[in-house]
Image (cartoon, rainbow, N blue to C red; front, top):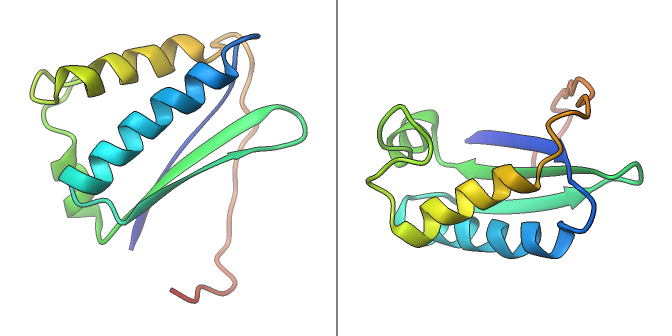
Length: 107
């Protein structure tokens, strides 16, 4: 399995919009592009972490057509959601390094 992790702090007042847009994107990639699932977290300091699970890296890479995000090959609603998500993220706030070690994985 391959996991893609996206993280960031949100601009004030964008939480509900961010969650709405995340659902659009996650649902599309699960239903149409082979993702196994997606999960959204928020920690106590306000850092949002989303990750998508894929059967393998090749499936994940093939799900993002083209080099540019969002690709013109994606449906308009999904492209708009990706742009909207980027607008919700506070680009001025430093994201802490994330280091993970798998200890157990019961899939």
